[in-house]
Length: 230
Ligand code: Y39
Ligand code: FE
Ligand code: FE
Ligand code: FE
Image 1: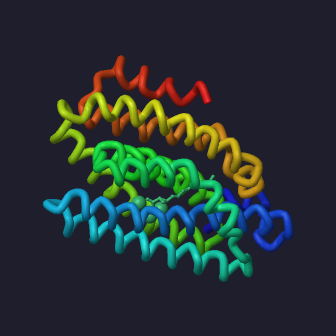
Image 2: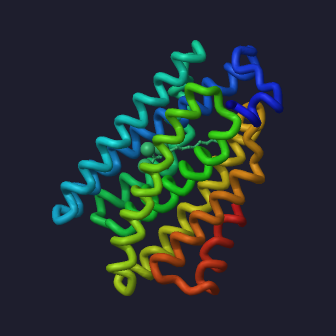
């Protein structure tokens, strides 16, 4: 039970922990809300996948409620204004793409980048979470793999016509992820989540996703390297 968290002697009730948690937890709550909104928007853009996408949006709402419960359990008030600002660039890029009917860009932002970010964060968080939050997060991360898979399958089926837009969307949005990671690195460390581990897990998920969609090894390397210039 709580093995690593226990060995590391994490004090979930210390003011330092709760202060960092107020921002990380808010990011997750706001992220789940935006993911919900993004899948609803995608349902409009992809009418033939509407039922699937509405189902994903409902899962995101459930995730949000779960993480709100995690904050209450620790008596933490999430810092939502911080989180809205944290997501603002990706949010803006998604809105602009959606308004232009750029489905490929929307899928890259939500189903690849944000889902891979979520999977990395949740995987790294689970071993160091409090008992309550760990159970919630274990349930959530299984869903996030399904969301990533949705994007992979659609983009694989439409690979040839999506390739150029994927390259451009990757170039625009991957650097933003590294900026976001840098902004949370100090808070994440207080929760015993190391930036290096987050980066490593993200790169593995994202590289696998690109390869599943149809990019060859050389392309995957090239696309992944774009972000590192942030
Ligand atoms: O698809 C989803 O459910 C994703 C919205 C949720 C985003 C979670 C973002 C997690 C970043 C946390 C950073 C911690 C270091
Ligand atoms: Fe989610
Ligand atoms: Fe999530
Ligand atoms: Fe998701």
